[in-house]
Length: 380
Image 1 (spheres, one colour):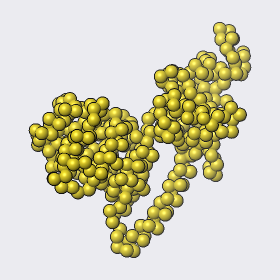
Image 2: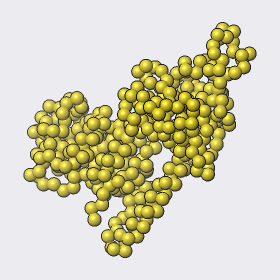
Image 3: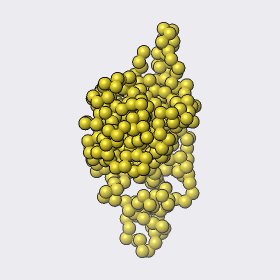
């Protein structure tokens, strides 16, 4: 099979993830003799490949906002174990135009500094929502596993996962010094990072949001509305309120004004204003409104900003503990959201917006928990 490289589609890449350029005219069928041979490719059927210099690697990459898009990686030079970065020519698939949007690395003669911004605009996104990209080409390319995962910057620079981890290790070393100081002063609580084993069993973590507020404040605008809830709603794809038998009639009417009742939950219409004017719905405690679940696509930078307005990250002792404060159906939905590659943010039925449970995709769970530990403020 011979194809023009620009005519490859995600369907082709699903069938054959790696293609190599064809420079030998004898390999091109007569019916394809008019094809420009320097841009003709044929599938590679034995993987992983050892030499990427003549290949196009088809894979899904994760954008900085958490979404995944098909990409072709060519001219690939992997990062090296000694810490040097690699380079790659990236072609992102623009689904609207069904075409590839290209941006070459900085060291290419055809490099244009504005290309990454143009590619982002074609995707309908801001540049910070696209870059850095995250890649994983294990199984497609031979090499040290830690070099086959990492990030790609807007200049085509590839940084291996091991280098990213080394940076986080240095951050953890600084954190250790701070921890020792807190222990010396008698202010240290349980180390949040000691809970990572439990994290994988539960599949979620929680953060403090508003902290304690009184019944009299339930109908008022609280700081977390602007700094936590609004940014999540801006990135929301779905929102549900799982009501219970204890839900008040007043709040049921409020839910009905912005959503549609579907069995045990209200499917909220995100085209409507669902925060301003509905403060009591968000702030309600003691099972009077059930659990609110937001399913969102949000990048690390924006999520870090949200988490910096939260406090005290931690992990529930079991899923049973979460069921004490949420309807089981709300937790099942949150777990389903995470399996679909979104992040579910759950505001419990029992304590309103005092806290929030976060259900990320499994592959992002530890990374986002560590982000919460780094960004959330301490209440000490």
